Amino acid sequence: MPTRRPYPSDLSDARWELVEPVLAGWRFERRGRALDLGRPPEHDLRDIMDAILYVDRAGVQWRHLPHDFPHRNNAYGYFARRQQEGVFAQLNGLLRQLLRQREGREAQPSACVIDAQSVKTSTSVLATSRGVDAGKKIVGRKRSIVTDTIGLLLAVLVTAASMQDSIAGTHLLDQVAAEHPSIRKVWVDGGHRQHLVEHAATLGIDMEITQRKPGTRGFTPIPKRWTVERTYGWLMLHRRLARDYETHPHRSEAMIHIAMTDLMARRLTSENTTSWGDPTPQTKQQIPG
Image (cartoon, rainbow, N blue to C red; front, side, top):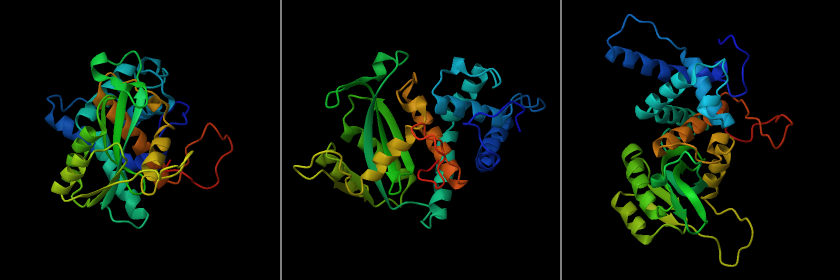
């Protein structure tokens, strides 16, 4: 246990037990490839993970990490290496399976939903990795995600905001078909083109384009697709995602994986995430986290 005073974003003992095997296995594998096997690890894995969660949850810059965490260079170094080696995606997949099974579902989903969200970027983002979403009038990046029918993340792709939904959807469909062969149905919105439906058919996936009824005004949940919109709402509890601050798109994808991992771990351990809009503690969990 850390000797410092805990932050709200810190892992509880119960959540640490969920993620420790993956992180410990990653460190063991890396040390197996290293030359200095006799040198003990310099940093505690839990402290490093707490530092990464602090950045994701509070939305601060790495250089603004409190001094009682490991140095920002070490924390970011671990974050970058874990992203490169797919550790955060692996954690996300493990917790998703556990959560689906706890809710009486099969570990692997048979249907999914695709949607995209355009967000503004910070000045640290390279101009070559951002674009203009003409429809939403946003200069920045686009987050395209795939969720199962209860809103748990299956895949994410971060691109320039100018990327067409159908092009991003093609990449996501290929990834989902390779990693989740049980998928047979997918719902998308009207921004996706007919050629994507045909591409899905070649993968053995039935794609359905859902749209709002003509004449509908105001907010109206669209059947099947409202779950992915809710997922975006869950992710926004992590202030680092309120805008895209990451220099590289793959780091943005990692921040989304971390946020979803945090949410699912809290849901598995029945721990609520504080909502700043309602300071009254919730007596019953309403969101995954």
